[in-house]
Length: 276
Ligand SMILES: Cc1cc2nc3c(=O)[nH]c(=O)nc-3n(C[C@H](O)[C@H](O)[C@H](O)COP(=O)(O)O)c2cc1C
Image (cartoon, rainbow, N blue to C red; front, side):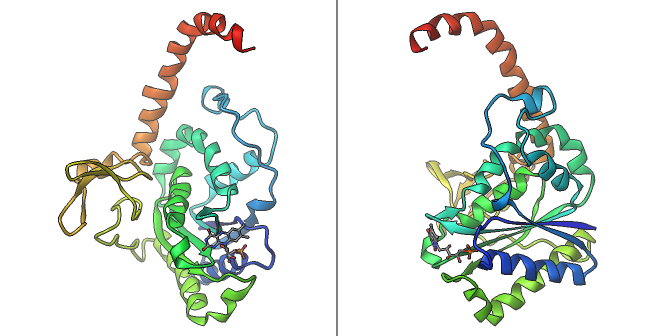
């Protein structure tokens, strides 16, 4: 059982690094082999939008993303820890997530084994971390890891998290829990009534009347008078990040847009002249 631990902070020793290492220690105790890497130190280019990943099966960029994808594909479990900057996770998280389009090619492979993620954010103050957990869960899902559990930690100064004994014990147990989950010995966290039942998001888009959509996995449902989220089983099965939907998205949308683009290419070229 392999777990890949990603740190998304350049601060060392930082709170993310400490939490990542403690969660990893807990996972190792429960039998996992853990590899820890700091993605904030990686050479990762921004997605160019060329779609070579899905049409040619390979990204054109010669950076460290290929190596990271290999590690992500081999891993059964993921621990990912990021600091909150300006109300959301540090930008390397989004940069790597933008490159996850290619994971649609591996949808069958991803569905074959029990995979799971533990996501952790560390922010200075609880009022200032409104969508950190949501974005981190989206990151894990984009690489094919259903969320086992998440932690929202708070400590402003470097290493200050070490003064919170309860948090350090909790993160250790969460790491252990992830390893047990991957062995089928424990269950994923139960979403609360105000959370998306697929990705745990506490944010919703109000679609009118009592209809809502989760902005992080796109499932639709309703909100009752007690602000409880209700989602049908069918909607759950069609969440954006399920392997089945990833495959449909690749075949029926991404690949289909190519034919339409090729048909319109000359007309676009003509109109483009004045923008050159
Ligand atoms: C540029 C910058 C922006 C930050 N923005 C937020 C923020 O929006 N909300 C918050 O609660 N903390 C914010 N913080 C505090 C960090 O999240 C906090 O210090 C965290 O422990 C950093 O984790 P690290 O030690 O792993 O780097 C910010 C820190 C920096 C350096």
